[in-house]
Length: 399
Image 1 (tube, rainbow, N blue to C red):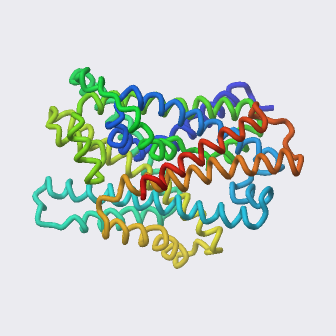
Image 2: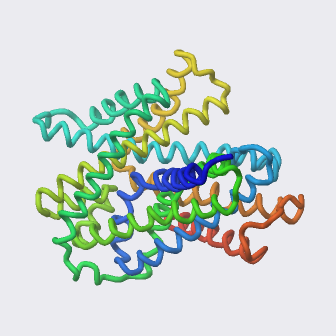
Image 3: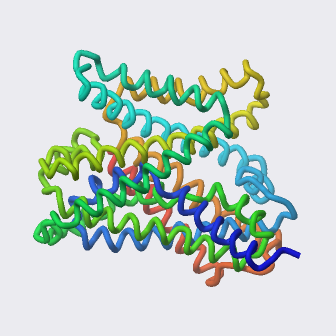
């Protein structure tokens, strides 16, 4: 029998896993994309997107419990939607992973280049920053999970220290009048980035197994684990929107810059800028390593590439070279890639597909016992319509 202490430890661990999966580089784009709407409209969207992603996570839990063993989303789609569902989910994963990698490499290369310029290497082109970053972290990806886990612990400590430091030095400088701006018509621009920033769904099968398939505990872990990032994002939003004038955000948006670059351009206190730039670095690197590791495992399984020395070189090349190519061609691609990842990849993969899988499993294959999400067909319809509206808005914005 497992002790109550171990059970609580597992639950806390699951909550932190979900929270850690959400928090990352996505939040660097949130203030830039939400600034035009203002703090109050953004607040409403943050809560709506958190609820949407938590609910779709619970749907994936229900689907996962239909199988007697831990099941990947692609396998879930295959079981409920057949070969077409399997193919679509596989392609969506590919699209989502590559979109995120493009976003992270584009942003990280710029940060590396700025770091080098700060030490007197201003003569080096920005492309060098992209190459150096990929070379260093390509080596880590090649070395595998153990090396990334060891390195990531230090990065996570750095992420927490710099976030708390930024909040501590930044809050006294907030200008309340900057938080008064409101434009509800512009609020929808931030939705795709929010969808990505609350993404934990690839962890649902692992967390379900970790918590011994106890549905109540997994639901609790999903709700609390995703609420922690919600709180962190709201403080972050309050801080950045209260420090940076709207004009600076408009410039950052047109250039595809991250929030900390807008903060730097606003000319705030040196300590605020220093903590912001360090936080941006840690956020991007932790996100990139997490996505790259998952992507490597995904490709190894899908393409049946064995993780020999030669196989790992091929996997690292597949993971890094295509997004590096796009990041070099379009260095200001961070916000665009983030929007594509959230507005198409994540919202379809973690929104539309779970609804279709649940509908098919519940009402055609009669697999759903018990139903974890109340509301029946009406609730599924609302989730589906929200996801379609996000995709529709993305298409309209691209025209």
